[in-house]
Image (cartoon, rainbow, N blue to C red):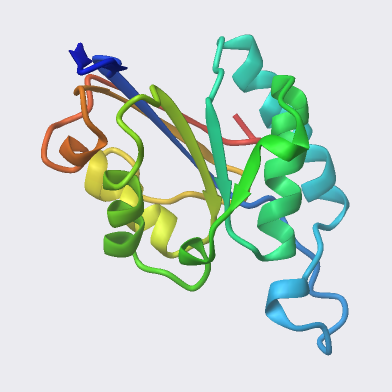
Length: 171
């Protein structure tokens, strides 16, 4: 579709990624500063490679500012062949809610066809379940991908996805 020179893609793909497994070894580390543990540092690039193998190519990656989420986003982006500089940090993805996340999605630029959000539970599981009742839990580094027959992100949540793909490191 063309709206005065702005081309809007008719399909929207939303990828939700829960951050990879993080370390709780040092109880003195603030929540925002918790790093990934060894399993998380292995799972995130593996999930990036799986996404690349399926042809995923997000035009925008938006991550929570928490270290574990941002590191997950960077490792997945690397697996997808995206530059770390292409990742946008958004405070609204930290200590959020499913409704707030949906607001972020609905506010995305209509010219974008595929966007990936990287963040936390319980809000990522809640949003994924709201979009598809088949998803009841998003374990660490889980990836839920939703394809919508929509020309605007504002329709997400009001229209059912045409396709849902769900993957975890253990699959």
